[in-house]
Image (cartoon, rainbow, N blue to C red; front, top):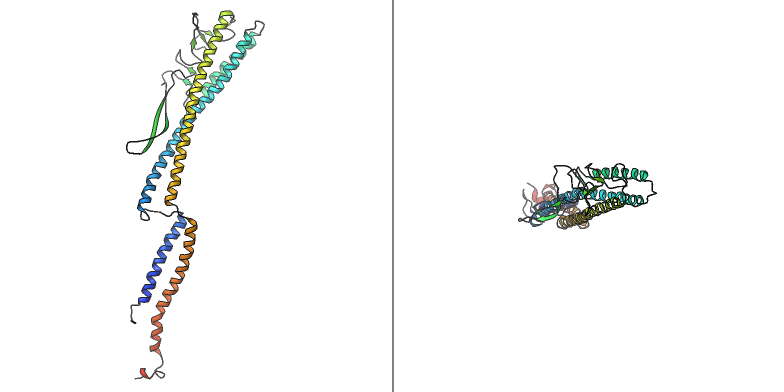
Length: 323
């Protein structure tokens, strides 16, 4: 055994304790963060995959938010169509009642006027974030650009799939004469007159119990007005069907994109997350080993002192140390 400044037993015990402390620090970090891989140094391959997937998840979340905005626009318009159809069906009921010559035409006409006002209010309010698919202003575009789903770029990145809805023939109220189902003028084959539900052009006859301010619609005039009303209802119904199909498609894409993002996040978790039960058991074991390591180091440091005690005995009791 060598006695001096170098203590092999203590050095060995210190190295063992240092390794235990390093393992303990790793386990404590995993317990604190809940992750098995906290940096590229822990596992470069898994860390790289997880980092790439995180960026893709963020892109999918952003796409889902964009599609949700588009969905809200379409949903607001679809709700406006539903309300419009309810009002139009009531308007037709009044037209049917007006066929009776004994019906109170003034009362029916007053309710029709109220319905016309409600139709305008309904269409104008069917907007979201300033976008209204049912009301077209003069000079505005007849296209609605929206994000319809997720696509993959040539480099493999997730990008938005841009779609365009042509609003020609779908608007209900249009400041441009001849467009918009509620503002369009209809002429029955064989008739030289036009019927219009909402009077944008005063020269056209109204669809209603009175086709002018005071002239009641009877006979051919009544049948023409009823026919024109059916065209309005059919056109609005077509708009509702188109918006309904678009709404269902967007809902499906939002759910799909969100679900895929959730799956990817769970996959990232499987790559990075620590098993907390295992780490907890490992922590307790390392803490116990640390205590044993500290005791072993203390004992190794005390061994040279014990040997030196032999040379500190009283010379009277040790004849070999007498001078």
